[in-house]
Image (cartoon, rainbow, N blue to C red; front, side, top):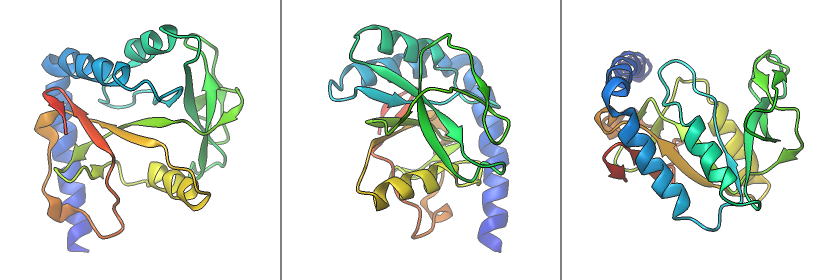
Length: 187
């Protein structure tokens, strides 16, 4: 119970830090993300996110990445049930209309796909590349389901450098991402 309370406190702190950092550091973060994505020729389908709360708005970076090659595609989450506890990714073209999914969240109606890489927003992050999210476990369940089926996309976290958190917040079941892209570089 103490760890859960600590996580709630840290989530509030990281939310405030992320809002503050976004005012002056979002451009730097997006530049590092753009360079990182261009450096990986193996990514053909990129699972992205639509920003909520104070998440960095990387829409222009994603659109430019996708438009640089006809072999590249973007995919957004589609919730399969009302409580958004299960999701999949569906193909999406920038500017394409979205419609409510089972949870009422605007999402693409494109074909289901398993991305080669997922860009996942982080509220906080650790040096061992563990991600602190909002606590709903949506990405964790999706990644676990893929792993159980033998699929493993590259996991790219996006966070501000200032939002680094202590390793003690994480538990044994918290798996690391492959990398964390920040406004000060890639960890």
